[in-house]
Length: 93
Image (cartoon, rainbow, N blue to C red; front, side):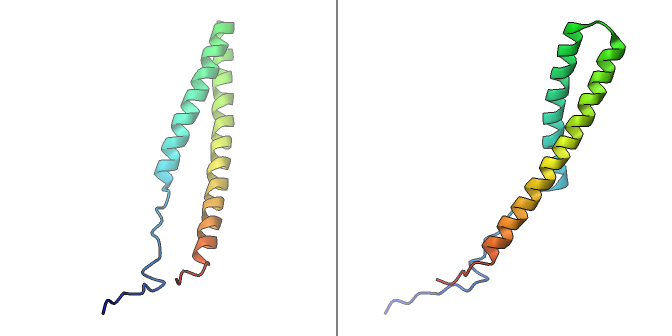
């Protein structure tokens, strides 16, 4: 007579990986660096005034920092909401 094991809710619980602050920082830094360098190159092609290039680079850096912070925050909230929703589902089969 074959028998089967029925998995409990704890045994069927999926393990979710957490996004760390370090990985968010690395992703944001890479994306921000590419965008800021593109803006600096574009401004430097239009003018040779180093002060204008420097100010444009700082403005782009500030805007990218705020933008990437907002994206990381909203994606973390969405990921947490999805996880809690999935965890609340009945896992018995």
